Amino acid sequence: MILPVFPRGKRYNSYNEYFKRTFGSRVQKLSVDAGFTCPNRDGTVASGGCTYCNNDAFNPSYCQPNKTVTMQLEEGKQFHAWRYRRAVNYLAYFQAFSNTYAPLPKLRELYDEALAVPGVIGLVIGTRPDCVDEEKLDYFATLAEKYYIIIEYGIESCYDQTLCKINRGHSFEEAVKAVKATAQRGIRVGAHLIFGLPGETRDMILNEADIISALPLTTIKLHQLQVIHGTNMELDYAEHPRHYQLYDAEGYMKLVVDFLERLNPEIVVERFSGEAPPHYVVAPDWGLQRADEIARAIEKKLEERKTWQGRLFNC
Image: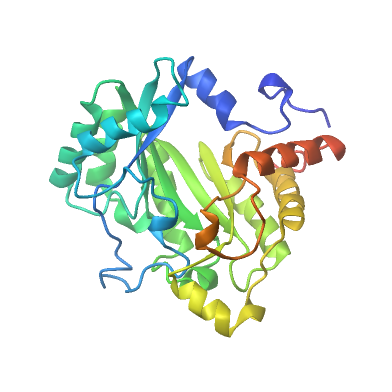
Protein backbone atom coordinates (compact mmCIF):
# COMPACT_ATOMS: atom_id res chain seq x y z
CA MET A 1 0.00 0.00 0.00
CA ILE A 2 1.06 3.58 -0.69
CA LEU A 3 1.37 6.15 2.09
CA PRO A 4 -1.49 8.69 1.76
CA VAL A 5 -0.50 12.29 1.15
CA PHE A 6 -1.19 13.84 4.53
CA PRO A 7 -0.31 17.57 4.86
CA ARG A 8 3.36 18.39 5.56
CA GLY A 9 4.39 14.76 5.26
CA LYS A 10 2.52 13.68 8.40
CA ARG A 11 1.64 10.03 8.87
CA TYR A 12 -1.76 10.85 10.31
CA ASN A 13 -4.55 13.35 9.65
CA SER A 14 -3.30 16.19 11.84
CA TYR A 15 -5.66 18.60 13.60
CA ASN A 16 -3.23 21.51 13.29
CA GLU A 17 -3.03 21.04 9.54
CA TYR A 18 -6.81 20.67 9.35
CA PHE A 19 -7.18 24.03 11.09
CA LYS A 20 -4.76 25.66 8.64
CA ARG A 21 -6.66 24.24 5.68
CA THR A 22 -10.01 25.26 7.16
CA PHE A 23 -9.22 28.78 8.36
CA GLY A 24 -6.00 29.81 6.65
CA SER A 25 -4.84 31.65 9.77
CA ARG A 26 -4.36 31.24 13.50
CA VAL A 27 -7.56 30.28 15.38
CA GLN A 28 -7.63 29.87 19.16
CA LYS A 29 -10.21 27.98 21.20
CA LEU A 30 -11.53 29.82 24.26
CA SER A 31 -13.16 27.61 26.88
CA VAL A 32 -16.51 28.57 28.39
CA ASP A 33 -18.33 27.15 31.40
CA ALA A 34 -21.97 28.08 30.89
CA GLY A 35 -23.24 26.37 34.04
CA PHE A 36 -24.70 23.25 32.46
CA THR A 37 -25.10 19.92 34.21
CA CYS A 38 -25.68 16.39 32.88
CA PRO A 39 -28.66 14.01 32.94
CA ASN A 40 -26.54 11.42 34.76
CA ARG A 41 -25.85 13.97 37.50
CA ASP A 42 -29.28 15.46 38.16
CA GLY A 43 -31.16 12.16 38.40
CA THR A 44 -32.81 12.25 34.98
CA VAL A 45 -31.06 9.06 33.85
CA ALA A 46 -28.66 8.55 36.77
CA SER A 47 -26.91 10.41 39.57
CA GLY A 48 -23.29 11.02 40.49
CA GLY A 49 -22.08 11.68 36.93
CA CYS A 50 -19.51 9.67 35.00
CA THR A 51 -17.30 7.78 37.44
CA TYR A 52 -14.09 9.28 35.97
CA CYS A 53 -15.24 12.91 35.74
CA ASN A 54 -14.00 15.90 37.70
CA ASN A 55 -14.40 19.00 35.52
CA ASP A 56 -12.08 21.01 37.77
CA ALA A 57 -9.21 18.94 36.39
CA PHE A 58 -9.42 20.54 32.94
CA ASN A 59 -11.39 23.79 33.30
CA PRO A 60 -9.19 26.91 32.85
CA SER A 61 -9.15 29.32 35.77
CA TYR A 62 -11.07 32.01 33.88
CA CYS A 63 -14.01 29.63 33.28
CA GLN A 64 -16.53 30.34 36.02
CA PRO A 65 -20.27 29.84 35.43
CA ASN A 66 -21.06 32.90 37.56
CA LYS A 67 -19.48 35.02 34.82
CA THR A 68 -21.28 35.83 31.59
CA VAL A 69 -20.28 34.08 28.38
CA THR A 70 -18.95 37.39 27.06
CA MET A 71 -16.83 37.97 30.15
CA GLN A 72 -15.32 34.48 29.98
CA LEU A 73 -14.46 34.88 26.31
CA GLU A 74 -12.86 38.29 26.81
CA GLU A 75 -10.84 36.97 29.76
CA GLY A 76 -9.89 33.97 27.63
CA LYS A 77 -8.48 36.31 25.01
CA GLN A 78 -6.30 37.95 27.66
CA PHE A 79 -5.31 34.56 29.07
CA HIS A 80 -3.91 33.50 25.70
CA ALA A 81 -2.55 36.89 24.63
CA TRP A 82 0.89 36.35 26.20
CA ARG A 83 1.39 33.27 24.05
CA TYR A 84 -0.22 34.37 20.77
CA ARG A 85 0.62 38.01 20.26
CA ARG A 86 -0.56 38.39 16.70
CA ALA A 87 -4.26 38.88 15.98
CA VAL A 88 -6.26 35.67 15.89
CA ASN A 89 -9.81 34.54 15.43
CA TYR A 90 -11.53 32.49 18.09
CA LEU A 91 -13.81 29.53 18.61
CA ALA A 92 -15.95 29.53 21.74
CA TYR A 93 -15.42 26.09 23.28
CA PHE A 94 -18.35 25.09 25.49
CA GLN A 95 -16.53 22.31 27.27
CA ALA A 96 -17.76 21.70 30.82
CA PHE A 97 -20.53 19.12 31.29
CA SER A 98 -23.28 18.68 28.62
CA ASN A 99 -23.67 21.87 26.63
CA THR A 100 -26.92 21.05 24.86
CA TYR A 101 -28.69 19.98 28.07
CA ALA A 102 -31.14 22.87 28.29
CA PRO A 103 -34.26 24.08 26.46
CA LEU A 104 -33.60 25.53 23.02
CA PRO A 105 -34.38 29.17 24.02
CA LYS A 106 -31.63 28.97 26.66
CA LEU A 107 -29.19 27.51 24.14
CA ARG A 108 -30.00 30.27 21.65
CA GLU A 109 -29.34 32.91 24.29
CA LEU A 110 -25.93 31.48 25.23
CA TYR A 111 -24.68 30.67 21.74
CA ASP A 112 -25.92 33.87 20.14
CA GLU A 113 -24.11 35.80 22.89
CA ALA A 114 -20.88 33.93 22.18
CA LEU A 115 -21.09 34.55 18.43
CA ALA A 116 -21.64 38.27 19.06
CA VAL A 117 -18.22 38.60 20.74
CA PRO A 118 -15.71 40.26 18.38
CA GLY A 119 -13.40 37.73 16.73
CA VAL A 120 -15.51 34.67 17.54
CA ILE A 121 -16.11 32.82 14.28
CA GLY A 122 -17.63 29.61 15.53
CA LEU A 123 -18.54 27.21 18.30
CA VAL A 124 -17.16 23.95 19.62
CA ILE A 125 -19.89 22.28 21.66
CA GLY A 126 -19.14 19.35 23.94
CA THR A 127 -22.16 17.25 24.86
CA ARG A 128 -23.68 13.78 25.25
CA PRO A 129 -25.49 11.78 22.56
CA ASP A 130 -28.72 11.78 24.58
CA CYS A 131 -28.81 15.58 24.91
CA VAL A 132 -29.70 16.52 21.35
CA ASP A 133 -32.95 16.36 19.41
CA GLU A 134 -34.16 17.39 15.97
CA GLU A 135 -35.13 20.90 17.03
CA LYS A 136 -31.72 21.61 18.55
CA LEU A 137 -29.86 20.11 15.62
CA ASP A 138 -31.90 22.19 13.19
CA TYR A 139 -30.84 25.31 15.11
CA PHE A 140 -27.16 24.32 14.93
CA ALA A 141 -27.54 23.55 11.22
CA THR A 142 -28.76 27.11 10.69
CA LEU A 143 -25.73 28.47 12.56
CA ALA A 144 -23.43 26.21 10.52
CA GLU A 145 -24.48 28.01 7.35
CA LYS A 146 -22.64 31.10 8.59
CA TYR A 147 -20.22 29.95 11.30
CA TYR A 148 -17.85 27.09 12.02
CA ILE A 149 -19.88 24.72 14.19
CA ILE A 150 -18.76 21.34 15.51
CA ILE A 151 -20.58 19.21 18.05
CA GLU A 152 -18.28 16.91 20.01
CA TYR A 153 -19.93 13.85 21.49
CA GLY A 154 -18.52 11.99 24.45
CA ILE A 155 -18.83 8.48 23.08
CA GLU A 156 -16.04 7.20 25.38
CA SER A 157 -16.65 3.53 24.53
CA CYS A 158 -18.41 1.49 21.85
CA TYR A 159 -19.46 -1.12 24.42
CA ASP A 160 -22.67 -0.84 26.41
CA GLN A 161 -21.30 -2.88 29.31
CA THR A 162 -18.51 -0.35 29.71
CA LEU A 163 -20.86 2.62 29.44
CA CYS A 164 -22.92 1.07 32.22
CA LYS A 165 -19.86 0.55 34.45
CA ILE A 166 -18.80 4.18 34.15
CA ASN A 167 -22.36 5.47 34.70
CA ARG A 168 -22.72 7.19 31.33
CA GLY A 169 -26.46 6.64 31.26
CA HIS A 170 -26.69 6.21 27.48
CA SER A 171 -26.01 3.43 25.00
CA PHE A 172 -23.63 3.27 22.05
CA GLU A 173 -26.67 3.01 19.76
CA GLU A 174 -27.73 6.45 20.99
CA ALA A 175 -24.25 7.76 20.11
CA VAL A 176 -24.48 6.37 16.58
CA LYS A 177 -27.93 7.90 16.12
CA ALA A 178 -26.76 11.34 17.34
CA VAL A 179 -23.62 11.34 15.19
CA LYS A 180 -25.53 10.42 12.05
CA ALA A 181 -28.35 12.90 12.69
CA THR A 182 -25.81 15.68 13.22
CA ALA A 183 -23.75 14.90 10.13
CA GLN A 184 -26.86 14.58 7.96
CA ARG A 185 -27.58 18.25 8.67
CA GLY A 186 -24.16 19.32 7.45
CA ILE A 187 -22.82 19.94 10.95
CA ARG A 188 -19.27 18.83 11.73
CA VAL A 189 -19.06 16.04 14.31
CA GLY A 190 -16.33 15.18 16.80
CA ALA A 191 -16.03 12.17 19.10
CA HIS A 192 -14.13 11.33 22.29
CA LEU A 193 -12.84 7.86 23.16
CA ILE A 194 -11.11 6.74 26.36
CA PHE A 195 -8.60 3.86 26.29
CA GLY A 196 -8.25 1.70 29.39
CA LEU A 197 -11.77 1.78 30.80
CA PRO A 198 -12.49 -1.02 33.28
CA GLY A 199 -13.17 -4.38 31.65
CA GLU A 200 -11.91 -3.45 28.18
CA THR A 201 -9.09 -5.48 26.65
CA ARG A 202 -6.57 -4.32 24.10
CA ASP A 203 -8.39 -6.22 21.35
CA MET A 204 -11.66 -4.55 22.31
CA ILE A 205 -10.05 -1.13 22.02
CA LEU A 206 -8.54 -1.90 18.62
CA ASN A 207 -11.90 -3.17 17.42
CA GLU A 208 -13.32 0.26 18.22
CA ALA A 209 -11.20 1.69 15.39
CA ASP A 210 -13.24 -0.35 12.92
CA ILE A 211 -16.53 0.64 14.56
CA ILE A 212 -15.71 4.35 14.78
CA SER A 213 -14.36 4.43 11.22
CA ALA A 214 -17.81 3.65 9.88
CA LEU A 215 -19.29 6.83 11.42
CA PRO A 216 -19.43 10.22 9.64
CA LEU A 217 -16.94 11.90 11.96
CA THR A 218 -14.89 15.02 11.27
CA THR A 219 -12.56 14.72 14.28
CA ILE A 220 -11.66 12.37 17.09
CA LYS A 221 -9.99 12.85 20.47
CA LEU A 222 -8.22 9.93 22.11
CA HIS A 223 -7.58 9.90 25.85
CA GLN A 224 -5.82 7.51 28.18
CA LEU A 225 -7.86 6.65 31.24
CA GLN A 226 -6.69 8.73 34.19
CA VAL A 227 -7.97 8.08 37.68
CA ILE A 228 -8.65 11.57 39.01
CA HIS A 229 -8.93 12.79 42.58
CA GLY A 230 -12.45 13.56 43.71
CA THR A 231 -14.19 11.01 41.47
CA ASN A 232 -16.15 7.85 42.13
CA MET A 233 -13.55 6.04 40.07
CA GLU A 234 -10.87 7.02 42.58
CA LEU A 235 -12.82 5.18 45.28
CA ASP A 236 -13.43 2.13 43.10
CA TYR A 237 -9.80 2.02 41.98
CA ALA A 238 -8.65 2.02 45.61
CA GLU A 239 -10.84 -1.01 46.31
CA HIS A 240 -10.46 -2.90 43.02
CA PRO A 241 -7.18 -1.90 41.29
CA ARG A 242 -7.08 -5.21 39.39
CA HIS A 243 -10.23 -4.23 37.50
CA TYR A 244 -8.23 -1.54 35.72
CA GLN A 245 -5.71 -1.83 32.91
CA LEU A 246 -3.96 1.50 33.17
CA TYR A 247 -1.37 1.97 30.46
CA ASP A 248 2.08 3.35 31.04
CA ALA A 249 3.14 5.95 28.49
CA GLU A 250 5.07 3.51 26.30
CA GLY A 251 2.31 0.91 26.22
CA TYR A 252 -0.30 3.54 25.52
CA MET A 253 1.63 4.98 22.59
CA LYS A 254 2.01 1.55 21.02
CA LEU A 255 -1.73 1.02 21.41
CA VAL A 256 -2.49 4.35 19.74
CA VAL A 257 -0.25 3.51 16.77
CA ASP A 258 -2.05 0.19 16.33
CA PHE A 259 -5.39 1.99 16.59
CA LEU A 260 -4.36 4.60 14.03
CA GLU A 261 -3.44 1.91 11.52
CA ARG A 262 -7.07 0.78 11.51
CA LEU A 263 -8.67 4.24 11.71
CA ASN A 264 -10.33 5.83 8.68
CA PRO A 265 -7.71 8.26 7.29
CA GLU A 266 -10.44 10.83 6.58
CA ILE A 267 -11.00 11.36 10.33
CA VAL A 268 -8.92 14.21 11.77
CA VAL A 269 -7.07 13.29 14.97
CA GLU A 270 -7.35 16.20 17.40
CA ARG A 271 -5.64 14.68 20.43
CA PHE A 272 -3.68 11.54 21.23
CA SER A 273 -3.87 11.86 25.01
CA GLY A 274 -5.46 13.72 27.86
CA GLU A 275 -3.67 16.02 30.26
CA ALA A 276 -4.68 16.94 33.80
CA PRO A 277 -2.70 18.87 36.44
CA PRO A 278 -0.42 16.36 38.21
CA HIS A 279 -1.97 16.98 41.64
CA TYR A 280 -5.30 15.68 40.30
CA VAL A 281 -3.91 12.41 38.88
CA VAL A 282 -4.07 9.32 41.09
CA ALA A 283 -2.87 6.95 38.34
CA PRO A 284 -1.18 6.21 36.02
CA ASP A 285 1.97 8.21 36.76
CA TRP A 286 3.41 9.50 33.48
CA GLY A 287 5.59 12.05 35.18
CA LEU A 288 5.54 15.49 33.58
CA GLN A 289 5.05 14.36 29.98
CA ARG A 290 2.74 16.78 28.21
CA ALA A 291 0.23 15.96 25.49
CA ASP A 292 2.40 17.58 22.81
CA GLU A 293 5.37 15.44 23.86
CA ILE A 294 3.24 12.30 23.63
CA ALA A 295 2.09 13.42 20.17
CA ARG A 296 5.66 13.86 18.94
CA ALA A 297 6.63 10.45 20.34
CA ILE A 298 3.68 8.83 18.52
CA GLU A 299 4.70 10.50 15.28
CA LYS A 300 8.20 9.09 15.75
CA LYS A 301 6.79 5.60 16.32
CA LEU A 302 4.75 5.85 13.14
CA GLU A 303 7.93 6.70 11.24
CA GLU A 304 9.97 3.94 12.89
CA ARG A 305 7.32 1.36 12.05
CA LYS A 306 6.89 2.79 8.54
CA THR A 307 3.16 2.90 9.07
CA TRP A 308 0.38 5.48 9.00
CA GLN A 309 -3.23 6.24 9.85
CA GLY A 310 -5.49 3.99 7.80
CA ARG A 311 -2.84 1.51 6.63
CA LEU A 312 -5.06 -1.36 7.73
CA PHE A 313 -8.36 0.46 7.23
CA ASN A 314 -10.98 -1.46 5.26
CA CYS A 315 -13.39 0.82 3.42
